[in-house]
Image (cartoon, rainbow over all chains, first blue to last red; front, top):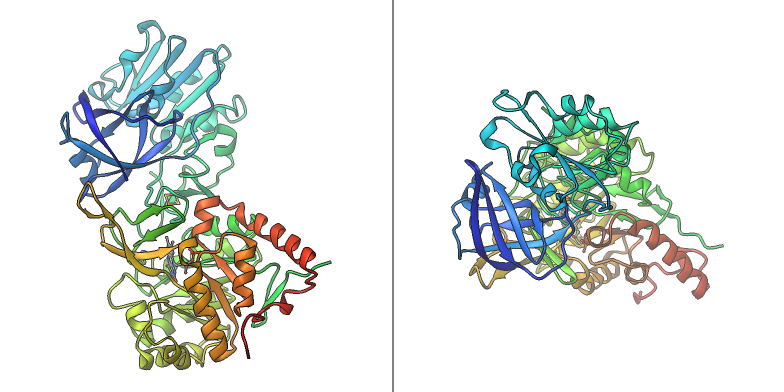
Length: 248
Length: 301
Ligand SMILES: Cc1cc2nc3c(=O)[nH]c(=O)nc-3n(C[C@H](O)[C@H](O)[C@H](O)COP(=O)(O)O)c2cc1C
Ligand code: FES
């Protein structure tokens, strides 16, 4: 287990903090770690910064993450990784589409030539919107409190996507699924980072698998073309005990 | 030409490499994919009568050349598992149903369902080292082992394998109690734990788990050798196999076929194709035409 001391805790939204720490190890955007809160469990966490100073951006979901949100500057974090296959980084203009805390894994990809579609349930939960130039940002909220009332795919459908060399996507399953359906024949090389529950992170437990692929090893980043062929994605997943349940 | 096919109690295997129980075998799509990627067949995750949640995370510790797990036998229960069996069996290769329970009755009920779902054999998990009231706790009691195997053998037609623990203090006695089975699977994980020196506590939520991977190979070899010498029965050898030479050693100790678990995590599903290629290469170099020539060759009769 790797231990690092937190340099800084930043409150991003009412339910999301970013913890920065120094760890001299190569990490690709899109890769993740298994973050351990001793006594309170272990959860997969994307790196939201991949330079010399690394970061995790954590949303309050359950017991483990709520404990992580109690950490302050100078506290220790424990993790193992980095794991998985990250995004393919290519030069040129990119369109970054993120929903909710999904923006965390996309953050290392944002640069001066990036356009963003940032979405969340409501205005106060929009994450990392200020990293985009005002003129290159589009917003969607479920409740219409800012930007388009609806989903990123609604914005995408009204856009000319031809100027974008890269398209990167991360967010809730149904958000990604709707975009994959739309982009499958237009931009199969676009990439999305998928999310499933992960118990092991090292390709043995099968909890993260989608249509035979292990998100923790083969992914979490896949091309839209690959995802379009995964029959389980957007339809079914296994519960913590392995029971097949519908994705909602 | 060399022949790497195996016949395991009437089950035809296109190569000697099966996927071990508990690794990538909870989801039917995954089992199918592992077989498409080269495994001769799979052993399912261990399944019980009722749904079981398993332990909270952390459930694994990643080590150099080994891992420790305490997944806690999480499974959806045999009825729900039928759907996964259906998906896996589409591949056409053998799917062996691993089952566990506390009493002979539990084992019988689950075994009957596994056979209905199309399993090619049953593997009795008498050896999981980290869950109270099942696994090794059941599998170290010779009276119970005998009763379970009698019950299961009396209710299914497919072959039944008893998977035993390297932690047994009386392996010979248990193997003798299990002689009504068709063969053995050896070994399950070795009871172990990891402590984080900075956090000053056990890493696994359950504290204790089972050690697997290359670190346990020599323990597995010894146990296969011992039980083969004692019983001469068909054995599926498992424990730390990550190369064809490891598998060859296991066959020389008496394994008719082998299973691969932790190494699939370490090297990916592609390991099955690589093992098959390496094995074919080794047999050509050594002038071995069929694996029957080497099974048990290192055991004095
Ligand atoms: C994550 C994990 C889960 C396992 N779950 C089971 C199980 O449900 N039933 C069982 O009989 N063995 C289980 N095992 C034991 C393996 O089937 C195998 O006997 C052991 O890991 C040694 O083989 P290996 O070194 O190739 O992994 C599990 C092993 C691991 C690593
Ligand atoms: S999290 Fe266990 S296989 Fe991916």
